[in-house]
Length: 212
Image (cartoon, rainbow, N blue to C red; front, side, top):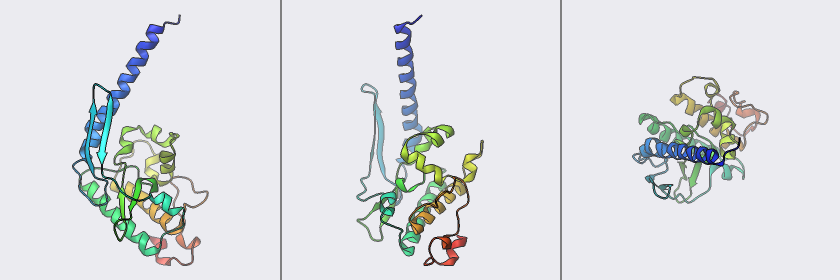
């Protein structure tokens, strides 16, 4: 028999569980990122929540510029630009890993290009965004940014019970380098499959980059 009181109780319980999930994420995950200091990581000033109003907030650095995804709509980067970009991002990842932290969501939408500096400063944003979500939600969610991230996941991320290592994020960074040099991901490539050789897409690229 339908009982509106039971339905209201279930809805309140679900809302409370959702709130607890977000506050735990803020306390345990985001709080750790306020201690980070690296020029290629978005600076997070404060993360907190208001119990009375049931609101959460994260105060962070403003980066003036577009995302790498937007930039690549105009075509590939020059080789020196792409190498410089990936070198800076690699330094940021090394720093993160030294703090025993992982980004877990590397893709061009999570890289902002700070045009106020020369060379342009790439800035990683959405630190730790995927640690909140179970693996299956992360893969199959309908959100465009997360759907896009499928193409940047290392092969081991598609296997059950595989630990995340620094090599996992190096793979994602390699996919970003490929896309920055070519301007797009290879057509028809399935997530987790090896990347084709760069020389198949542009004769102007050095053959030595095929083995990178």
